[in-house]
Image (cartoon, rainbow, N blue to C red; front, side):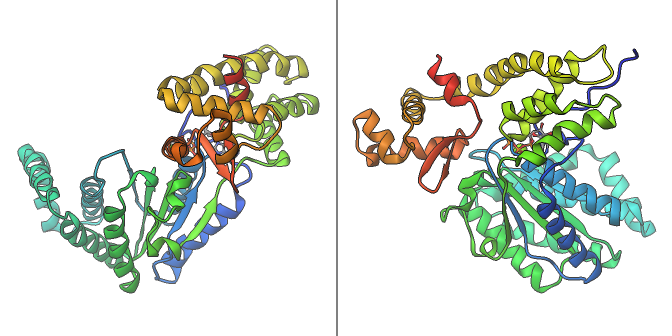
Length: 380
Ligand SMILES: Nc1ncnc2c1ncn2[C@@H]1O[C@H](COP(=O)(O)OP(=O)(O)OP(=O)(O)O)[C@@H](O)[C@H]1O
Ligand SMILES: [Mg+2]
């Protein structure tokens, strides 16, 4: 049998063949794009929050591809990094998009200038960057404003639009984010044809990150996939690739991945591999996939988080696992009791684990973001 490409995508930022269970978000994104493209208004921002590996980044990419395929719009993508200002990157990306637009339908002169500057004077880019770094000492917003306004002007002239996607937005410093929000707010008044989508971990929602502009946005909290969506995400890629998955095999894999999108891809990937010489994915292949996928989750996700944790974080994580295993809900209070401390003394370590996305809080109950991590810790 000839080799067929594995149709599962167990990597971060890799668009799955079947983007299951996100229809409402996609609907909302399509709507926002249409508001800008057809009504000539700037829609309110869309904000996607959720734990690690639930599929935020792939939704940003999908939004970009909807805007690109339907309206031919460019996508400006930035990813925030810890302790690093994002505005210089954003300015850079906006300026590059302006150049692209000018190149696409050039007025003759402008094109000549652009080409000369970019190809003939390589040093210029460096100087521009240098100047910007210097700006940073102060407030870089004054440079961002004209860049965004120029972009909006070019887009309006060309009856086009653009989509701006901002990933890992929870890492942004509030003041910098507030400055961007204020500019986007101005743009709303000026009817910029710009669709803005932010994605980040749950702390993005907390008051020390949120800005008024966000509060009026359209929020989506991405969670685990439901049973039917999990089954669809497991079965569709296999079916489309010509090696359908049996019902019992799909049910077994769905039980194991607990609706966690990253695990869906990982379990699917191993079941596909285990059935390499067959024309269906049967229960035996699914059974063979379980320990392999589990090991990979352990080595990758659990071990990486465990090794990166500080001693205080490790104690906290073990306590969460122990409380959960005892059958009572892990809350700030019960975990503190387990450790013989006051909740207040542990609030910093708890917050740091939530911020990193290792733990998630629902109501006041603490959970491990990745299903199975609790069992992994207890077996250490
Ligand atoms: N709706 C979905 N259905 C099936 N698989 C999905 C879905 N969404 C995401 N995935 C898969 O889950 C994995 C993680 O996706 P992605 O990188 O977008 O997550 P993320 O939320 O951005 O994670 P992080 O917070 O670590 O950046 C990828 O392998 C992707 O293919
Ligand atoms: Mg991501």
